[in-house]
Length: 220
Ligand SMILES: *Cc1c(COP(=O)(O)O)cnc(C)c1O
Image 1 (tube, protein in one colour):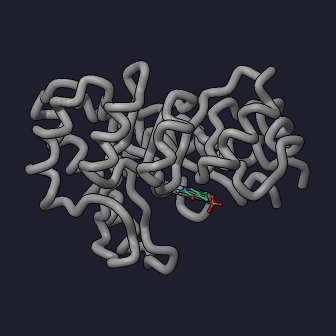
Image 2: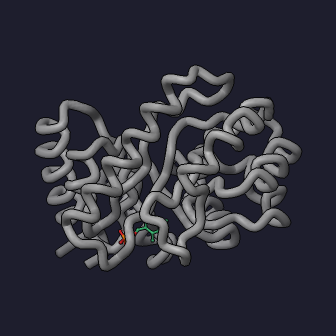
């Protein structure tokens, strides 16, 4: 299948899930597997939100397709020493997973950065992110940082999660997001949910995802 055929198929499924769930979802194309020409094809097929997971690849891609109108997402773990190189080029950062990183972003940003707090809902030890219990302590502190805006929560389900586990994780993330939003903390609107990838984006939308991050499905 061509990229544009894959895009059409994914968007079709997204619209069906949106209609069932009653809310809109933004599809982010993850281009970490492909070169800039393929990324360009994806954008030309209609996916204008693009994500990379590594700083170097992010900056390289961005430069190579700088003529296109793209909203840029950084989705992977970000080392503190790399924040200054990349943060002002990012529209959305999805992997805010420590207080120290939040302070570094606040220090290096020249404008307000839209961030997702990464939450480890599944409790897998290999996963990055705050545990749900930690959030009560970190939220008031992050709320004080003038350049860090928490637009929502991001979570990843284990690759081998069963259908039941998957739904539990998505529902838990959704209830955390709603609970945080209800606190009305400064700079923490927390209205968005970034969850769902190639394998599980339809389920994620049905359970509240407002951003899905899709890579391999576009490039098969
Ligand atoms: C690679 C990646 C994705 C996309 O994964 P696919 O299964 O290829 O759709 C989504 N989110 C993150 C954080 C990733 O690193």
